[in-house]
Amino acid sequence: MSKRRERAEKKYRQDAERGDPVAQFNLGHAYYLDAETTQDCAEALDLIRKAAEQNHASALAQLGYVYLLGNGVAADPTESKSWFLKAAEQGRPHDQFQYATMCWNGDFGSHDADEANVWWLKAAEHGMPEAHHALGGFYADPWGTGPKRDLLKGYMWYTLAALQDVPGHSPQASRTARDEITEDMTPEQIVEAEDHVQSWLEEHSDVMSDGLVTNWRKRIAEPLEPLTPEELEEIARRYGRDP
Image (cartoon, rainbow, N blue to C red; front, side, top):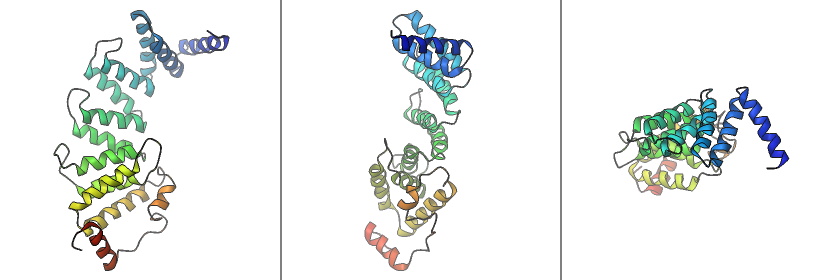
């Protein structure tokens, strides 16, 4: 071990002994990754648990994974869910989205659409495009695993996701999904759904990127006038529907 690493570990140990949750988690996580024996794993998890008891979000999520996968403890989906939920309650959108997706996928033993919807919505409030896309599928879902189909909400959430070109997210996938559901929408419904997009952007301008204003035809700064009959006809031609 290098002297620099020795000094860093010593500092983390001192801070962890004083009860610093950041040091407890970082040290515990490092030990957990390097654990070679059951005793090593137990000591690492003890540090992570101490950080989790102080509501350190990453420690809470780490314990969720530990109990989900059964690494160093007996696998327990119910215990795993409780830790992931506590992580989501700390307010980080990534943790909220992750917990929601796991509820939807049935990772804790059963599919829970209602819980998934609640936490996707919380993540979406932070402007997270992955949550927007997930909600688009939730409301546009034609297979009956979600709530009663609501194409206006599906269109709105898919559009919000499509506007955001950020690392790790595919706006093209969101655009494609949105365009697919327009086949079941009238031009008037599309216009109404776009109004919902405008309203959402106006209400959440503090969490959305500046690029969205441009991508959405500057609708926050320059609200659009109602669509003309000619524009309605163009929408009808585009989507093969009667205006």
